[in-house]
Amino acid sequence: MLFLCNSRMAPGVKREQVIEYLASTRMSAVGWDLVRREIISHVLWKVGERPGVAFTVNADGEQAIRRVLDELEPVKSGLIEFDIDPVSPFRQFD
Image (cartoon, rainbow, N blue to C red):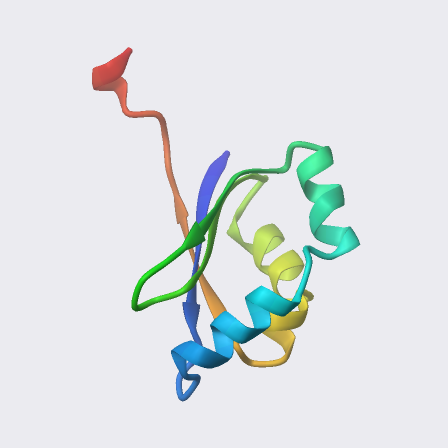
């Protein structure tokens, strides 16, 4: 199943804190492994008033994704949280 993972700043976190973290940090080995195995795809930087990241994930369910995301350093440190939504192709383009 395909999901959209969309980060957002955790309550009380300032935009500058997220930008500083993202600018000074590289994707973790765990993150790269997920990309290599094609579990994570379409990685995007969010710009503007709500900085962060968004990406699609192939997984069995939201709980499986949540367990992985909860282990990421910016989530563990309380900088960002993720909304996870199931998605499907836009059939009008088929």
